[in-house]
Amino acid sequence: MILTDLHLRNFRNYDDLEVAFSPGINVMIGENAQGKTNLLESIYVLALTKSHRTANDKELIKWQANEAFLSGHVKKENDKFPLELIFSSKGKKAKVNHLEQAKLSQYVGQLNVILFAPEDLSLVKGAPAMRRRFMDMEFGQMSNKYLYNSGQYRTILKQRNQYLKQLQQRKQKDRVFLQVLSDQLAAYGAEIMVARVTFLKQLETWAQVIHEEISQGKEQLTFQYASQIEVAENATVESVYDLLLAELTKNEEREIEQGSTMYGPQRDDLKFMVNGNNVQTYGSQGQQRTTALSVKLAEIDLMKEQTGEYPLLLLDDVLSELDDERQTHLLTAIQDKVQTFLTTTSLSGIARQLIKEPKIFEIEHGVLLNED
Ligand SMILES: Nc1ncnc2c1ncn2[C@@H]1O[C@H](COP(=O)(O)OP(=O)(O)OP(=O)(O)O)[C@@H](O)[C@H]1O
Image: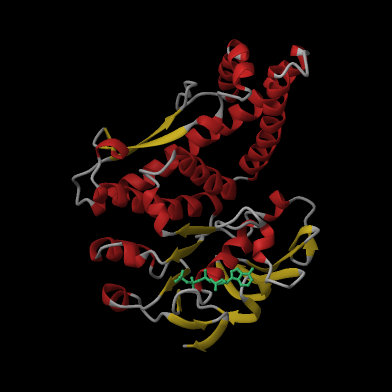
């Protein structure tokens, strides 16, 4: 798919910006703090209705303005339609083809993006929350059902944690209500866990091929879903529901003591293994970076397999973090295939040689100086 154009009003440091993109590689060039990442972020927001940098939507609205507006046209193989988003103090409105969507989960998935920023290179060695977020963002874009289940799960988890705290402080006594919440939590939790395992298996197939190529046949990459509940590759939702519910029931007393839910997808993790060894513990920094790159590139292929269209790739200042060899792998893998947006302070070295006909945008203080 392609984002043909973008219109921003009062988004971050942009007053009013209208821009047409190339279906190939778009390069945002500028000094620090000019608005390159803001522009990339706006594409991410247009796709997902939320930012990768902040959970507070108000930060997206230009200082002193009341609302931010974003729109753009998405072109797919047999379809072209506009997307529109408005952020204001009242919340957000999302439109597909001029029709307002009652649920954001109906909007998400129309435009698919994969973001690759320097912090993604820490996907392997960073905290588990980062890998859970990674799974949720990617799988949520590919599956409305996943997105819906995650939303429901979060709501019930919050409710259950509040109730556990009330039981802990003896403000409540009713254990039957806790069981009701446990039952609902286990139902949505099982859906999420089984979906994660299934998607990871598919992602692994793509990542293995890429990783083998980057490591010149020396390394075999495998994934492992790490959970306190055993989720076998072919596990059914019902069987995981039974196991999760049993664990929640067994540990009720401990959870009340702690005032929080100790089991479920919010505690799970993802392990990357190279030749059978955990890369997080045993891998060199180079192996950890190669793994992160393989996973990102695999996401592109998986998304194409799942949705029938390649997603957009957003590269936020990531080229400078990769050595020439890894840059070459990345750029040759995406060229002529994936519409790409990258930010950089200068396009030089191997990237300048490899990128065919980039469309270059020069940005200064939230204004586009030049389109080349
Ligand atoms: N809501 C907002 N309203 C107005 N300006 C904002 C808002 N949020 C951020 N900014 C401004 O946007 C600028 C940062 O832009 P951005 O993060 O896109 O930088 P960049 O060009 O990617 O730079 P770097 O190369 O340092 O990452 C800062 O000057 C910041 O003050």
